[in-house]
Image (cartoon, rainbow over all chains, first blue to last red; front, side, top):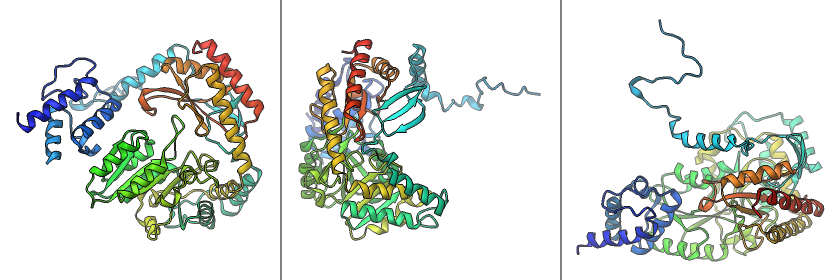
Length: 80
Length: 415
């Protein structure tokens, strides 16, 4: 697996506990639109992602991230 | 000729441009549904008369106030009132100007001197509100490549201070020492860092583990700002707050506070020992671009702050009240925000907004006012009935309060 594919797999696994509606997860899945997460859920989830990859995702960056694919890209960039 | 639009007729905009109020429709509907059940609007109560720090007339009824932040009961202190009246007579009703132009009177300087004495710090800067103090200090301190690290349960003024500036904002899980430490370690070592903490978090009334947190911040080279709005006057040996109580006040770079709680009027401040602190008066926009506090307000604040320096008996009584109410509500079967009483705030957790609003109204009808707090102001989407005690509540009033909670809780079916 490429690094990006691995990151995608890890992100997917991290989403599952928060995926109350059982939404099918793709690159285009949106956190607010499809997963219907509120701001508290997003905060908890971001904390999990940060710890999983040992990175910091600032609130400034979070404002730009809408979909799973965008999050994977952001994590890939931060890991470098 | 076109007809003049009727006042109740929606305006049609060119190009189908939407009504900017459309985004509030869900909230408008939620309110209408709630009020349609006969529920009194919990967010538009009027205090018709205020008899003392603990009693007001609401809807014509004598009501015990248990949701005011008037922790030390200074609002009717005779010395405080006399100082305000004197300043009103001698300096007029307002300054009509900015602190940096015509709006700094002798009273503003005297108020800042009182704060320096109260906190034993070198510098004090008085703002027109506590909200503006956080807005101004946080936004001006951290620049574009700096980091501001905040607790997820931070007050709106802290979030808004972050939004107003252009620093990088990092949040960590509420009161989680390890989460803070991990995030600080992940930041670039050479970046400027400001960690913003609160002594008492106002929704649940819980206290921050400042001792550990401040040490971690210092180890990471971060500056530390602590908002002590809800602890000034009664936590710590000299009432300086949680940082004093936990023995770390000397390592805190900035303390933010307010006059609208224990001090009993309105206004905000920042105190610090930083040698360059005074420059903030020229660069802090919420300080510069607003009118300064009226002379009567700074006079009441100064008098109140000086009296709070000698308030140890009142402090002890406030703690007694807090412990008794916490224990009493727990015994009645209510779910509380904290396992033990940690401050003068006791949050009673409601099953949902509807039952919370019903309980709020039952308490009011039985002669007790508390704050109804609901999302998004509350953590974890909770609906809370927030009780804040006053040093002027008598033991008899605390008994009365517990009686009203029992009667109302049973009527609404919460206990």
